[in-house]
Length: 305
Image 1 (cartoon, rainbow, N blue to C red):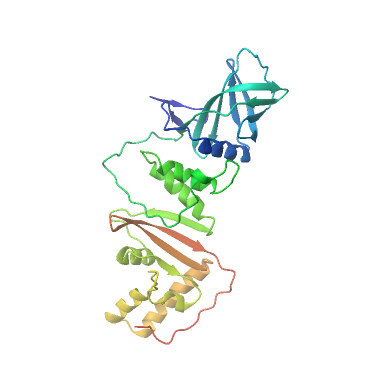
Image 2 (cartoon, rainbow, N blue to C red):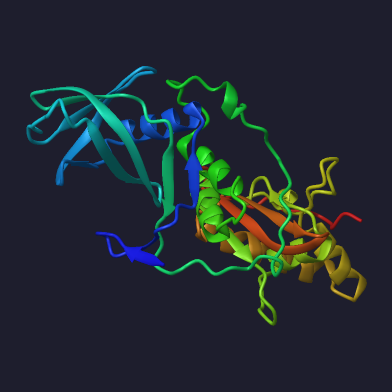
């Protein structure tokens, strides 16, 4: 059974997750405070708006828009807020209320609901995906409640993949948002049957290795041999067309057009990382980086073998 929240998004009545670890609860509250996330505070059949003012290990301070009358005989309060496509709900008790400040005890648990425009489809035992860890962030258990690392996006990714039922579109969207920090353009593409792809993507599909063009305005970057860490360039493609009869002039003309195309788009470097699923390329991550350097083609006298 689902319900629709005030934003028009579907929210399940049963929580997707119940957080009981104090560090993770504090982490979400701190993130909401830093973002000045709007809170819905439900007390004695009335609702009030507010924000988190302070998050401490032994208490929480709310700042309400209007004065919230406080009855010492009734201290139960419900606080709800939306953060990073999730709806959080926590029940706790009021210690004291003075003017617009409300002092609460830290909650022992927090309910998490995933908000979405469409209902989740159960694909258990139907779709499988394997992730390879390319960087290990600090252990969440070791993070102090007031610390800001790892980033909120990485914490959201961790929280999603820790679930028994992972929402892959959410994971991909968060990964793309994190990758955008390193590149002016970041995109995640999943392979589709009978779909045509550009030359760069086809090289990644064929060789199952990351394609990296360090300097798009330099022809030599497009012809680098395979590196020790497994990065390829366009060299395998030009070696192959040379074998089937392309002349050096044809190869250079094609390469000139390719380099000029990227230069006109103001692309300084290119990286395409394959997403491998059971040894096969299921998709890729494409990063494009702009370069302030002027377009300058360096001629190559011959194609390396």
